[in-house]
Image (tube, rainbow, N blue to C red; front, side, top):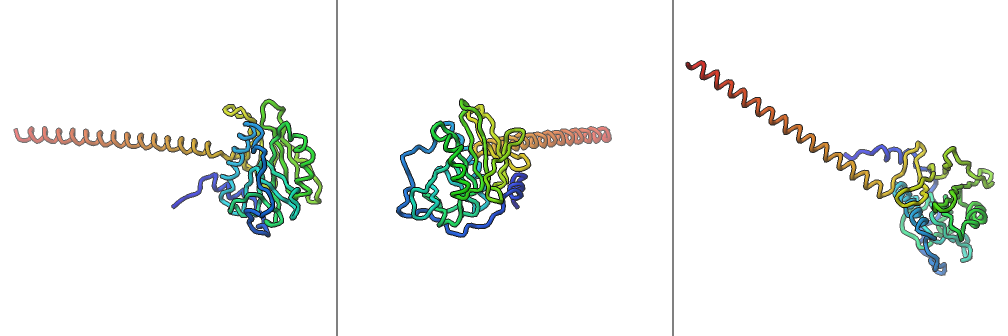
Length: 268
């Protein structure tokens, strides 16, 4: 029988609660473009950040079929108006079916808006990300939380977030002592660290108790290390059993030799 790991138990405990979207999954609506000539990521720093965080989201939310994770795809938020479109680096939609995949996301057809949006600052978009996009996402589109982060180590560190209050006001999320921000919508804590391998200022998600959400690469390394430890333990067990067996055989041989000598003495 399969048993849940400690992380899987926590994963189920901390998974956010939400209603299902009122619409239906919509892969494509004719007449709405779904691609442009812009690159997915501004730099390699941004690409590493997007791929890493998206991978963590895919892995963490895979147990819930009604959480959709989008990466740099168009979000149309007003039916009939193709100019009302954004393409955030990463967005998460609680309540929307994970599959099928979409070419774009249409809020009126899906019956919901993205729940949380992440933008990673670049020189060409930083001003818009800090200013215009805050009311655009939170008011015009109806996003619940919006985060921005600077992954480029050659730029000053910047990690900020905003959310809509119950009254509808825009409130900036206060950081903790370590500069981290808590997402009430996702029930996850976020903070960045400098990755010495990739030289990227990586934004990473953590469970509310501080447990990190690993990447696929990290999870593979952990599983390989665990398997190596299991093999070492198995080899040690087999060696111990072999030594015990050899000791028993030596003892039995000695006992047999002693019995033979006693028998010889008795026959003299």
